[in-house]
Image (tube, rainbow, N blue to C red; front, side, top):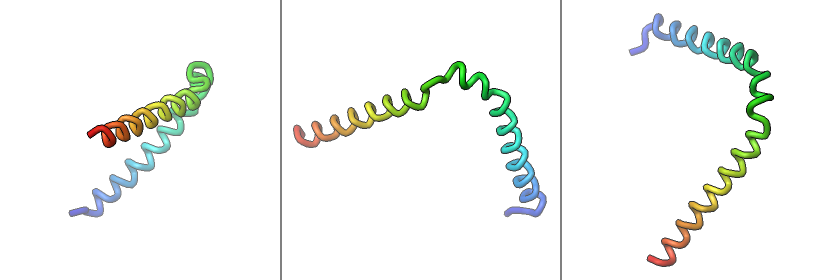
Length: 65
């Protein structure tokens, strides 16, 4: 199934992927501050609205049908 070469490749790939993601994030950190200000609050608000609507529809359909 998994040969030693495949395991080594998977480990090297995962480590390289994480390192490159960290480097990329650090490069884009300045853009995140400029373009995504208060994004976490908006995501939390809209997520809460979606969950409340879903639960409301679920409750209404279980009561009506």
